[in-house]
Length: 287
Image (tube, rainbow, N blue to C red; front, side, top):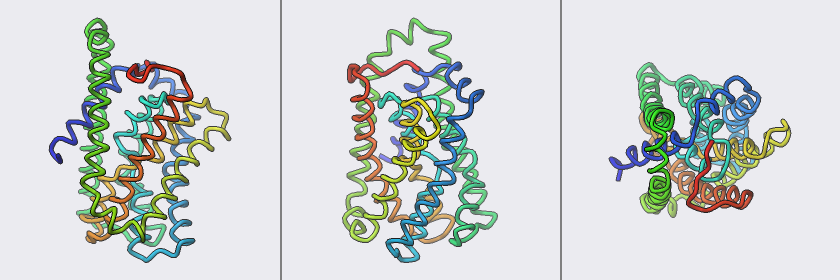
């Protein structure tokens, strides 16, 4: 399953690219109000929320560190497909993923150092840069292929649109189910201690995204995109930081619990977004 996961994620990003346009991405870049609001929630507010939750619940130092690692991680790749399926602003979600993934090699050490968790050595920074670039490649390359196919082969893209939409739905469901199954033991073992904090962080992140959209006067689909991006963290990178960089495998337990919870909330966000717009379940939107 570990070998198939990157392929599945890349396929989802290819489908996202088929529904995205350069004009959509350009709108996000040249009218950056929504992107600025999203990055504020993702990179600034989320670590603050994690610290407040850990302090309020009086988590152990290990659990606190694990929760801060989750909050410092960039948005997950799956969030872009969830944004697409939920009728959110895919261009905004994609831009947030790309920016936070590229900035992770600086933002993660900075957040953890400021919070008192610790700093990284040269090897850790190198490893984080490497995994950031890998995540960027899994996101950007298939996305670019999808964009190019829609731009230069519109007839072929139109013919394969419906079958690919159905296949993407199956792939996404498989990723969610596989995550639940693979992490079932960690979920049961650590749910009593870290479960409430992870759940609070996930709900608070989603609520902060929706609130940021409302406060700044963004369109509903933009606020939903920020909520999706903030709620779905890059758990793979969080586990890498915990184990390879901080050298404590027990720090990955909060990330494993969060992985299960965020996939459940992802399904809820898709249901919420589709309920907001009356469209056919298998017919993904053009962006």
